[in-house]
Amino acid sequence: MNSEFTIAVHSLALLAHIPDHMASSELIAKNVRTNPARIRKIMSILRNHGFVRTKEGIGGGYILACNPEEVTLAQIYGCVSNGTLKPHWCSGDPEESCMVSSNMHSVMDQIFCEAEVYFTNYLERITIASVLEKIKQGLCPLEKEK
Amino acid sequence: MNSEFTIAVHSLALLAHIPDHMASSELIAKNVRTNPARIRKIMSILRNHGFVRTKEGIGGGYILACNPEEVTLAQIYGCVSNGTLKPHWCSGDPEESCMVSSNMHSVMDQIFCEAEVYFTNYLERITIASVLEKIKQGLCPLEKEK
DNA sequence: CGATACTGTAATCTTAAAACGTACAGTTTG
DNA sequence: CAAACTGTACGTTTTAAGATTACAGTATCG
Image 1 (cartoon, helix red, strand yellow):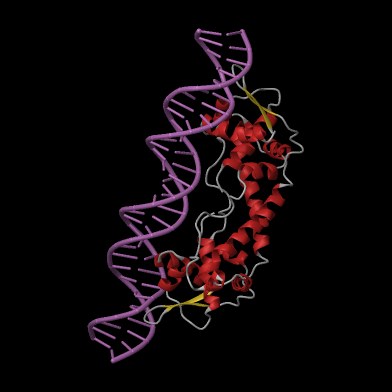
Image 2 (spheres, chains in turn red, orange, purple, blue):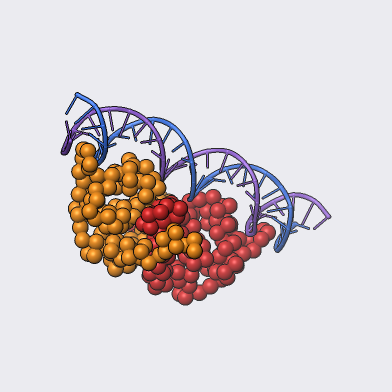
C-alpha cells in the first residue's frame, strides 16, 4: 500500500480541525511533512469526490466540504488507494504447465481482493471525526514533556 | 506488504501438491519464478516454525511437515510478514506544535495495527489445502486453450 | 489592468526498498 | 572425496515511491 491514503486522512483531519480556515497546499504539506505538489494531487481527488472545496487565487486553498462525523476512512481509501493492498510482485508463471505455477497468481489475487473487502469493512467504522478525537486524546507535545 | 507472504504460500501449496517428493530450492524457485536464494531464505523461516522439513546434501530439499488442512494463511503471514500492512512512509512530525501533525503518526499506526488484526482474522479461514483446492478448480493451461 | 498568490497537472529527477545474483561455508550421500 | 544440496551473507540491479521543478490557469486586490 502506498501512503496516499495516510496523507488524505491526515489532510482531512487537519481541515476538520480548522473548519473556518482555508488551508493552502503549502500549509498542509508542512503539517503532513511532504511537498505541496503531492498534496495538491491528492486534494484534487478528494475534491472530485466532494470531500473538500478548493479555491484558486489569492486567499485560496482547501476547506472541508463534508461532515467529518459521517465520512469514513473506507470512503477515503476507496477513492484514493483502492486495490493497493496486494503487492505488485506476482508469483508463478501462467505459461508453466504445472497448475500450481500457472494458477497461483489468480488465486492470490482473489485472496487479496477479498481481504481488501474485510479491510474496508473495518475502515467503515472509523470516521474523520473519530480520527481527530483520537488525536486530541493523545497528549500535545508540550504536555508530553511534563 | 512485501511478497514474501505470497512466495511462502505458493511454496507450501506446491509442497502440498507433491507431498511425496523432496523439492529443491531450484525447482521451487522456477515454479514461483524467482531465484533459489530467496526461496531458501523464506523456507528457512518456515522450517524454524515447523511447516517444512529440510534436508541438506544430495537428494535434499524441502518437504511439507504439517497438515495442509490445518495450517492457515494467518500462521504463515504471522511468521513471514507480520506488521507489513502499514506503509513505511510516516505522516506528520512529532516535533511540530500542531497536535494534528505531532500525533497523526501514532494514530495511523494504531489504525493499521488494528486493521492487521482483521486481515489476519480473514486469513485464519484459509488453509493451505483450500488454496490448493482453488488452484485445482482453476483450469490447467492446456484446458484454457480449448 | 497587471501584480500577486494561489491551484492543477505533467515531466523529470532522486531515493529507498525490493528483488536478484553471486559466493562460499556447511552438510549429506554415494 | 566429489557431487548436490542448504544456509546465509553481501553487493548489485531494478523498480516504485516520493520530491522537485516548471508552468499554465484562475481568483483577488490595488
